[in-house]
Image (spheres, rainbow, N blue to C red):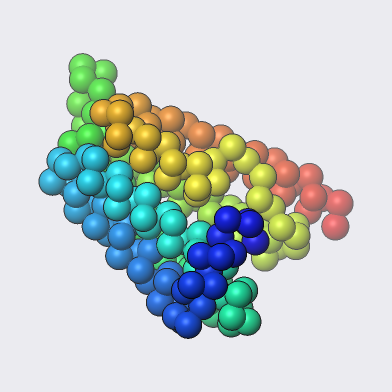
Length: 186
């Protein structure tokens, strides 16, 4: 557990960690709604809060001895819903276009969303196949969300979506290559 999270986790230790997970999703849905409405700074703040609670849920579970397999599953599934809410909001709000090159917000946003979902899926599927923990790659969820937050705060959201689209698919490729190497040895 990261040192800075421990004291905060103690404050939240009376709360069910699954509630903290759900709270993270609520903030990410709010971020998506603010992206759709065009209020990028508030969207970025909501996403920042969602990320904070996403980090906090596991720490709270460890702090109060309530780590469960279901909690891990819930966290993983709700993270995918959160990613979808954020990218759908960005696309709905028209923040993923690159006129005159890419006029369609759904194309680039869809690539970023698909890549984000596949980063997680590739890891889960490879680990289920026997690779052990496979957390390699340049675009873990925290990095992807940080890019979107920075894009929201700077007004360069379309660039952030482009970068997320590229690095998420690179991460999928990195994981596929690593999984192939590991699974060939088994």
